[in-house]
Image (tube, rainbow, N blue to C red; front, side):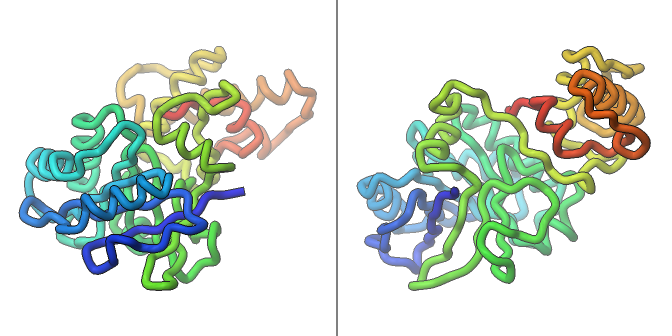
Length: 280
């Protein structure tokens, strides 16, 4: 199952169609000089329809601290609202994107913060795979729910109809999305774990908070082949040795009988899911 939503900006009506939708993202700001004049009304309309509300900021070159403050001031997000950084300006580098995302996360610690970008930016301009709490990927050439990226994704903007951009979320239900947005455990009490990002994601030098979380879990399950505690968020030889030790341990514990490539780096989906790397 999945959830559905739309995203709107100033050129969409305040009373946009909400039937059949679970969430709506509304453009709030751009740089440090533009505020969507319809933002408050559009957000209120989505909230009145019972949708999970998100606000997004279009990144421009400039101070991360100033842009984050400007965005959060005008977004006026309420508890349980989502925040997103819209990365479409090629003059905003990948490192500047990372800095701005981290700044928003720091200033709005109670909210989930996502990165929105198109497939070209993700594959060509991004260097770290850092996307805050989740990747909102625009790939309208792909069928809904099947964006052409290896990295795990949270939302997929797959097309446009009725004058609105259409999105699909990787959640089992609206309740699951609401719980995630509020940074609460799932309704059945189970914690959220990082979905398997695909074997190709695990390349040497990859920097991501997911790597640090994996590091901590491998140590916790007794597969510690790290020689240093530095650079915990960068994939290195310690991660390779520790994960291979985990695959051997998992295979033995569950009588898998894995040999050869099945015990070698990179991680596979079954052992990754069993490792239970927690979401931040």
